[in-house]
Length: 70
Image 1 (tube, one colour):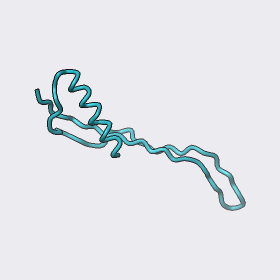
Image 2 (cartoon, helix red, strand yellow):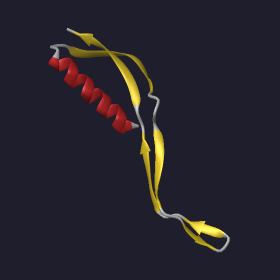
Image 3 (cartoon, rainbow, N blue to C red):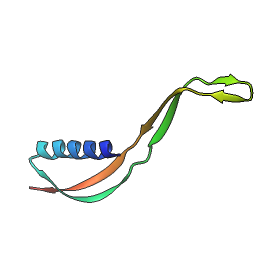
Image 4 (cartoon, rainbow, N blue to C red):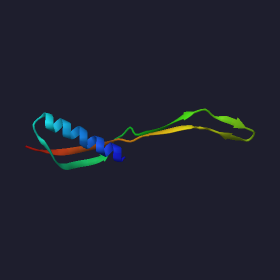
């Protein structure tokens, strides 16, 4: 989540600078829909149990609305 926050600030700052403005206070902040976790790997079964090596990827997103200062 901290990476999503840093990315949101950086993107908003680049956009504001491009329009000759500066970032002001945050107006709204909240989770963005569409975050998910994805497991990739193969399952190996032995007897009654199973073992599933692999990697879990977690995607997190936020929506932030900043006020702009001139």
